Image (cartoon, rainbow, N blue to C red; front, side, top):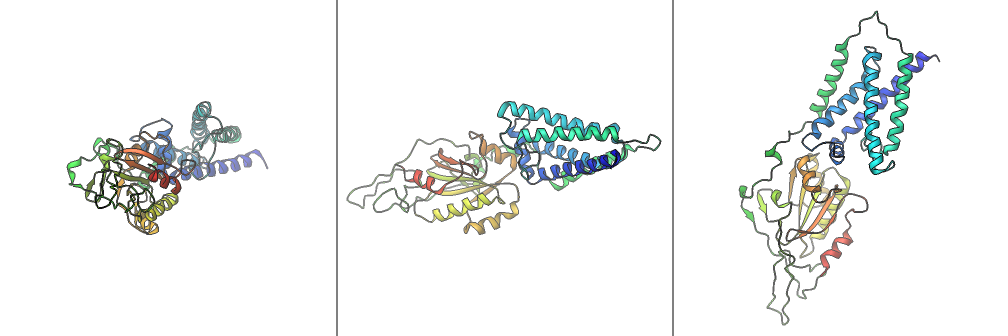
Length: 363
């Protein structure tokens, strides 16, 4: 096989590499946006624009590499430049967090890669592109059409913004909804057991108020809990058509994605537990992603719980405020607005039913 044929094979492999990389970042695209924000590269307001633009460039370059127009003068140099920028970013991440720490996001959630693995991949790709550059001929007599490159890029960009629409980030969109939109809903106190013991099926009063049962010989005093504070969730606590006083008494606030299997399993566990008297009321914030799956979500959980959909920037801003490493599923057990215990993600900090029961029964 001569060098020309080898170059053609390499170009096809790079086409596959870039297209797969671009498509992998699209599903789900919010995960790529979140990664950009977590890395401190930009705010949630800019992430939807930059993520789509970057994926469009990656997709366009992948397609351009298999066409002949301006291959050596524009396409290959542009592709190498992009890879060099990626290598620079990966080098910074390796210095900060370690070469084998985390997922670089090169292939989204499809193929997790460490920064070192991604760096090696990019260096190998650059070497292959240099080989292609040196062994590809560009017929100067034929007319190179820049319009072909422009059309490929425009179509790729248009595809990204049409296939993955989003609401522009505005102050109005991210600002908390004022509390006077609807009347405040008063939560009914939960039942107190005859014995007054803090056991499952007789958990402390959900309202957080001191309750004295005068019908018994020995009056039972229920702990009113810590002093009330304003939680970061309270400004968004409108579920359905009611404003809930989420900072009053004991509440469980969840952050779920409707299409997340772990979130569905967590919700199913909470529904099961909520059937016990005295269990705190559960409220859900859904991320504005695959919201059409919400009915299916509650069908799997076997009950519908009060919920509200938050746009993606607001969802992650509220979830990660004070909890920078928070991810879905997020479960927060609160008492009078104070976060007593929280569970986030699917690894060591993942939600555990036993831990929730322990903290609920703790004096």
